[in-house]
Length: 132
Image (cartoon, rainbow, N blue to C red; front, side, top):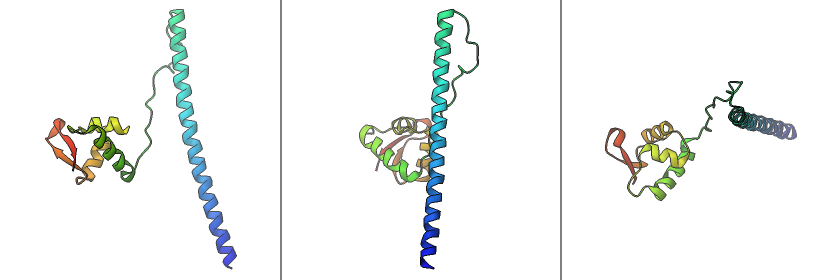
């Protein structure tokens, strides 16, 4: 009976691994597709420049690339590292986001949910953040 429980647990672990691998493969495939679309757009633009005619298809329109989601636990050390490196005179949320590679709204959400991490100075768009 004990062997069957460990076998069931092993099956569940293997199924979880398969699920994770499928998710990773899907993410990788989407990234490759986005890169291919950008390559096609660049080639169409080059062709249009050589021939003097506008691009034939509408694939030249750039698509918005999606950033990977990040948890607060993973974002906190990135923000603290950016503040330690470049935040001597304080940084605003947009500057922190550029250093971390995330959207400014995501950084603002993190700061609002974790007010003890950074010291706030100012109000509105001129708000600057400092290490505590």
